[in-house]
Length: 191
Image (cartoon, rainbow, N blue to C red; front, side):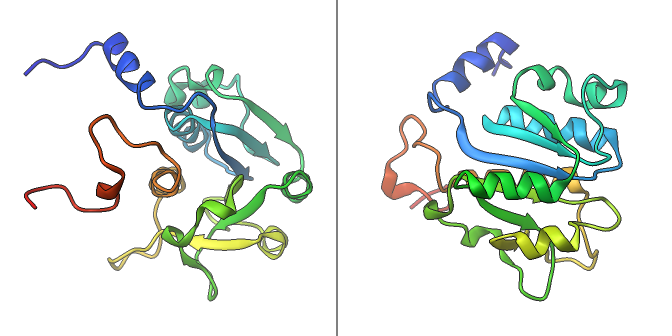
């Protein structure tokens, strides 16, 4: 078995992705770690998302630590900076986007409950210490969480985002070559 070259990987993935970006954006609410920001850029570019919205103190490209973990992804996806997260969320809502905050609250629901009618969807991820700002939570249409089964109370924000994005995209992605639509959501293996 031979590993694919980077160009061969890109060619393979071009066959999977839709012509247009997925109608999913990420809003970064005052992230303090530029390394997390870079990781989120990289995941967002790999997932073919619509845009990254950087808010408040969130580091913006060009930034040494963002670029270190983004590995060039900041030039592969649309992004913009908005000084206030609440303003960014209200702007997205005014343009028809559903806003989902990724946060664990008394009313949050598993992220798997997001449905196609929720798109276009803006996913808000919060500060590593304080989470999504309370005013932004109040403005959100949905509050979703990545179900956790262990004892640790939270995931790293970039890790949580990566898991969340790929769970969400399962609702939208076209079938892989050779995959029957009736096979979607079934475990792989002998049947």
